Amino acid sequence: MIDLSHMTTETRNKNTMGLSKMTSLEIVSQMNREDANVPKAIKEVLPQIAEVVDWCVAGLSKGGRIIYMGAGTSGRLGVLDAAECPPTFGVSPNMVVGLIAGGEKAFIKAIEGAEDSVELGKQDLIDHNLTNNDVVIGIAASGRTPYVIGGLQYANSIGCNTASISCNVGSEIGKIAKKRIEVVVGPEVLTGSTRLKAGTAQKLILNMISTASMVGIGKCYENLMVDVMQTNEKLKVRAQNILMEVTGIEREMAKKVLEQADGHVKTAIVMVLTNSNKDEAVALLNKAEGHISRALDIK
Image (tube, rainbow, N blue to C red; front, side):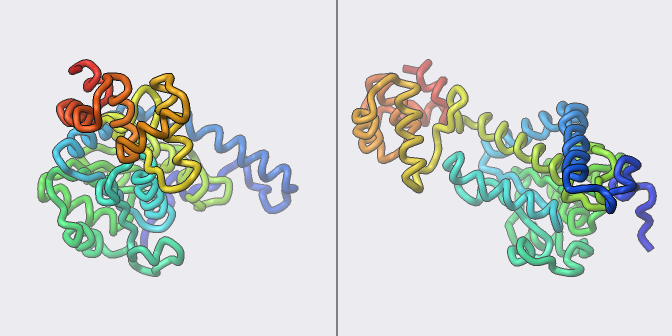
């Protein structure tokens, strides 16, 4: 039998012992008070998060990937973060990958027993042609999910940088990963329901890892998402607004330059700021490894 009694994520919250008798306002107020503790807990592990970001930047710069692994809520959060990177940063769907125990169908409906397979974690990475340039990040609120353990062990065996994100100190996945992020948010409002504070903590940390990593490889300029994909009308206007904000040109000119740049905002910015044509701007960006500020310095 699995012993969960020592896990903070499984203990009862003394502040919510009367949860079943609370009014709706009392419940959501208590949840709000508990949620306020999450950023405080994350603050304690910021140095570890930053180290993982540095690994990711280095790996991505060599053609590697960020690969999240998890089961249940943890897996879904990894898949969600990965899915949001292509439209936000204009990257390939293969650059940030979310793996969930049981496969894509498990995102909507739980696949019983999938998370208990160490071998499945290993096999999913083999199927994704893992290389030592990839960074594998195992996510498990409990810190003991066999699927994640199997993935981390295999990733270690081929020389990957590996990290773990859990909400218990001394987690099993933390002992396996080369860098452990253990953010202790305390017992849940509803005992053992780690989709609550633990899930919130994991989401915030994944936001940090993916966003900071993309900034590190040049996917933003100042604080603007200059590689945004123009996949709908809102994003087309956003692209125009970004170009206008950075360069000071008017909207009609922004539309014209973006058309000349084949819709690539970053290229359009360099074209305007360096008075270059498309080919010259692309060449500058290539020399600068995609960083606008470096491209401007080169010019």
